[in-house]
Image (cartoon, rainbow, N blue to C red; front, side, top):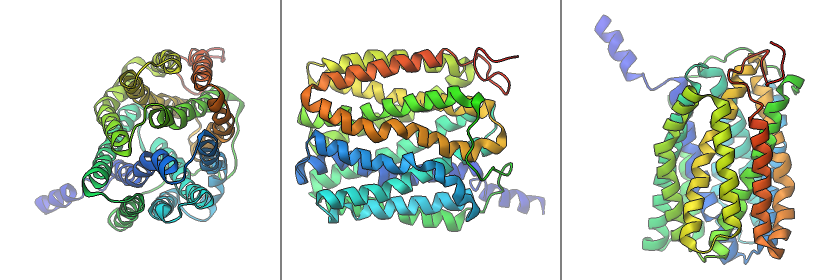
Length: 398
């Protein structure tokens, strides 16, 4: 009996909350990574987008993120695990049909629907991570989850590279294959993983607490910084340096390899050095990268900056674990939604406004990004060495 029980435990050892978080992260990246990888080339080559249209499209993509606070109300209808599954299916389904609507309006519609799936999945995934993972090891485990997502990215990018450059598949076919792959993977997870017990019952209302103000500020500035990289740094590679889709895919593969290697290390460094130091190093690095972007002289230096910029994204784990340490456990789910909304306040208007600035002077966009990174650095220095409830920022009592 003991051997049988041991064998059963071993055979189901992967059916854990951490295993599910990793599986969902991998499945999400298949559709999302392919969609993001091809967006600029699809828009530029098929739809003849300029910076203006790219800005509008990216702003539309961020609207569901701005509305992420509404995710808390969906908890009246379904559990977070179920909502994460549904969101992933929505993301994969919308991404699958993107190439079959090659018009400005069609691209905006599929962008909006896939974005609903992505942002509501991210809200649920973050909430479940902070509830299921122990505080002492959460940064290290989150680093491993990020690395798993990067491995999935690598497989996806490799497929796009081969499908486009060697096989000659069209945008629509690649979108279809990667989107459906995510849908199939999620259905398999829904069947194979048990329904895990929730953590502490979550508040089913919008939560805004004064003592979380520093987390809100860091989240807001993080959303602004993300737009500079995701929209304009990538568009620079296509418009200014003439990168073709297979070259963008190769760049993305390099990003994935670096994240796979560094994300677990960054998670361990957060455990060792703390959130304050890691955020400080991140924003100091970003200031230098954005200033260099403004006057980058050639494509190979731009590639180096792009890779460094992407690796620094992994340090954002620090913001999540900082909140985990200071939060009331019942606040995690509603605050995850509110945080995504705050993160996307800047994301809704920055692509449009900066898209117009881009037409006038691309360097000004990146100098504005450096200024944002400096503001973030100021906030990072307010994070306590040992954050906890009652010690949320450097001026708090106790």
